[in-house]
Image (cartoon, rainbow over all chains, first blue to last red; front, top):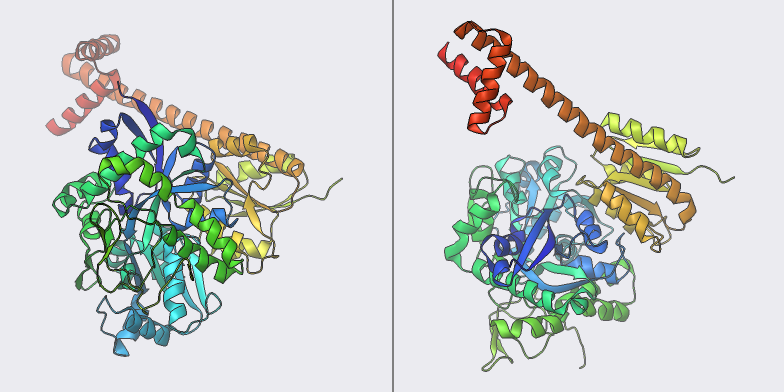
Length: 392
Length: 194
């Protein structure tokens, strides 16, 4: 008895790991599921495959279901985020020419201080800075707008954010189509390895606990298939817990590197999994704790407040009604389903599904479970705070 | 009669682009423009201001088109995929055929359908042609290698062509392999022994 075969879609990125590991290491089989993993060439293709039923669930940029709920973009159907697949994991890189100008002006490339790096970037590039992101609705775009907006850029007007498919990112930088990029691993490391640019910051320097990818399904799929949805969520969650153990990184890298997944030498995904990055073509290295999280700090919990933050940012930038946007956004991060399906599997549950985003300089004890749950450091680089429900 | 639509086809492969253009010409008097380069795709498309964009579903550049759904102003020619969401069948058929279409909002479904139908047919036909071509090539390669193996056997063992072929076939059957594989092994081994 192999149980149910579920077609799942993914983009070849390091953070597709929970889906791949769940299938390869038997977490799916444990739930009597077989994942038929389908690699997609673009986010819009993956979203359409999901909307039109060619896959049951997909590895998806956290802002895509929110954008769809707000009526933005070319998607055809409403999507839900059942759980967060990964937190953080992006890097910001600049062209060699821009890096040289920033160094001349005294910037030290510490790969940590987002305010200093942003000011150095603005001084060296000025208005009209061209930055590549993988998709218009992505944490890459949101983090850039937040970062440069907080440092005085008028966003989006002063900034040319361009969509560049990640495999073309290094080439776009090398041919001066863009000055900088924000992209997920392995593509940042590949830009350094090919000598196209230098890495300036990890995404986590802008927001230390940013939801990056989610497990997305068609709206109401989980209600119509409650039993299968529960099994899918448990398999993925256990894969995330396995990935959260540093001892498993080498095995995970070997699996991800295979031709049917990322098709790369195994040391490339390993850099992203470990947060050990080479940040310049000359070989400078940086170690980033919490560079990419699959499990620690309740990483998989789909906080309504995370969706609300994304919705609020999009509404402000695109001139939509804030309250409507917050409400629509909150509804797509299905913390209700997470509670229903994962409480029995051993996942820690917070008492509420909203939290204040930002403002936590150190881990805090929050209500939940038998004796409370520890929430990790959650800080925006400028000390900003997002309260999803002011006054309540 | 309605005026023809302005259509942009994003396709790197010249041959395939021409096939699609031909089929669209047959479908009506449309103004068709092919973009074969992926750099600055969004700008090239917005300069043309097309009513409809067709692109291979497996092209990573499809994400670039998504930018067009966020045109500079809310009233500025919004583009969306399969605007007429009532016709899911058409959208699904297109996705299965590997074509994705971006359509300017407000374009009537009855005007899009014949164009998409034509494009879908051509995409299918192109896939078939490609696989037929690949199969023919492989068959030719196999025949060449078998001929060389036969020649080696005829010279080495002083047998005629039919006997050489029979020997290859018997070896393949005994080992549960394809004749072409046995022939290939023989040719490779002979080259090593030279």
